[in-house]
Image (cartoon, rainbow, N blue to C red; front, side):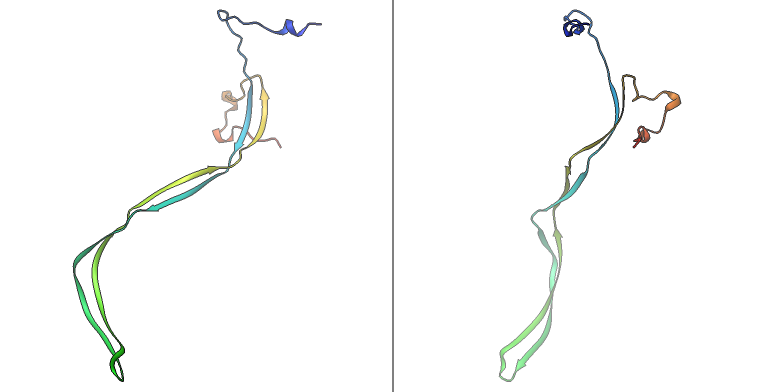
Length: 126
């Protein structure tokens, strides 16, 4: 029976280190929400040309114009600048993992005979 101290390899800076790798296939899923952001700046209006004024109806009551109304229509061509900043923020939820097989052999880089489409690299056996 060997003690734990016999199984520990002490590495010195000038000695070659021992490297080991482990491989695991997995599917990671994370919900992502994208929320649009729209901000408006200050609107600027410029008049284009002269206004056109058209008379409207004059409504009389029995006393002439007391409590009566007058109306007209004003038509004006304008140009409006509406500066808008458009963007988005993203929010991620809690990730989930579906664990696949593990190995001390490189199962992440399929051999030529085992190659499958990248997005089909791992399928759950469940």
